[in-house]
Image (cartoon, rainbow, N blue to C red; front, side, top):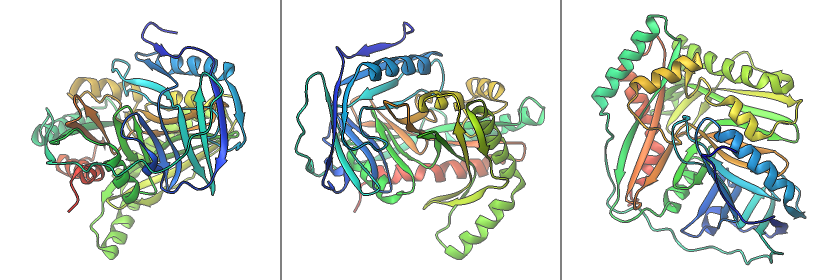
Length: 419
């Protein structure tokens, strides 16, 4: 394990999972502090407390996490009376986008409550034989107070200039696509109770995966990889258009998105990068020839679900490491795109657009891409919101700015006090 890895756990873990009655809204169970979240359509996992954790950084962060998790799982004593994906020993995690960023972590909660396909359970994790806790709602989250928004260090006009520079590099033949991100800074009068925006995001975007790990939260539409009993799935999103709220007009816009050469080109790069990364791990793969249009409340995306059958026993975390960064969040070719991001973007992405999700003791798990996301900073009164756009030769800076603003809407709305 590299010198950049810091481990917090003191012995073999004892784990017990047992079925429970449906606990209702999962997010309502969370205490204010130390919450961990991965929910989708009402199902998923929430956790709190810390039985063990690993913090790591650098180019070896994924390898460090995989090694630590394998050892932790190998020594754990597990009684799982539920036996569904997400029961038993699990860790929540999120990883930095770049090798030089801090903040990558795997966290094993003391308590996990899960629900999947009508089955609900509680998992307790500790150093001794754990007793099952009473599961009940934790109280009403405090709504954000006095929210104000401002551009990050790179203002909107400057960012459009960066897009224009990226287009020039693409036209010069340096690369085919690069994803440029920007941030928006929110300030609130009182330290943020992250349960409030999480509840809003999960309610407004039930088809997305709402997540929270160590102050990094959001609701991503993009599943980087899911591994479940040998079946691999990855949802690729690239190519976006903003919704108007007029259903007839939006249907027409969806049709134009599906025919847009610029967006189809961007999407093709992203699908190809995912398929190429998964191919060494799979005996067979299904890569649809054409994307479908995914309709979300704020935007529509070109989407493709790539599937495969595992052949080499890799874990979901290993697959996530193989896929990151895909063309959907980095560009094509990847090395050249990431180098250009480092050169011109002028933004510390932190964990934005990195893998976020969970892993089980068997290696199965779900890892999304940390999009439609934000990071709580300092004393909890500052929140950085992130959005990015895929830039190709036909990109227009003003249009990309409008797209980034549309992608900021979910978290921006979630931080705005409801009247």
